[in-house]
Length: 104
Image 1 (cartoon, rainbow, N blue to C red):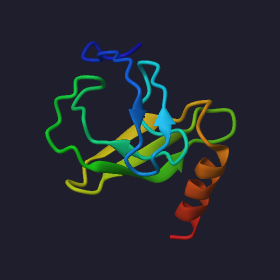
Image 2: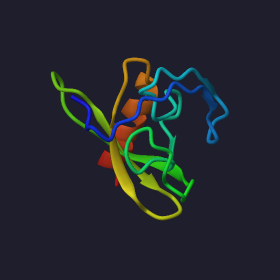
Image 3: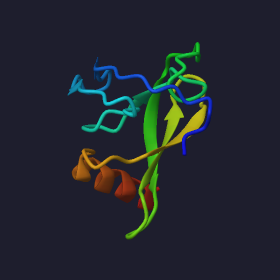
Image 4: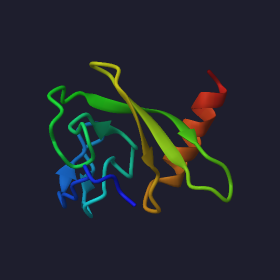
C-alpha cells in the first residue's frame, strides 16, 4: 500500500534525456525508453523537490520471480531513489543497465 504521503499525478511528459514522449498513468516516475527520471519529488507525486536535476539510472536490482527495481542518482545533488521497473520499460535498457553494473 502506498505511503500516506503519496500523491498520484497523471502527467504526460517529454523525457529530457532522450526526448521520448511519455504517457503518464499517475505512477510513472521515469522514461520507459531510457529509464532516466527527474528529481522533482520529496515524496512520490508531491513535486516538492527544488533540485530539478536529472536522475541517472545507475543499477537494476531484483531477480527472476521478484520485481525489478531501478536505482536512480541525481546528477546534480547525488540524491538516490529506488523506483519499481514497469512492464512497459525497455527490456533492452534494463539489460544494458544490469550489464553496466557487472562491468563496473
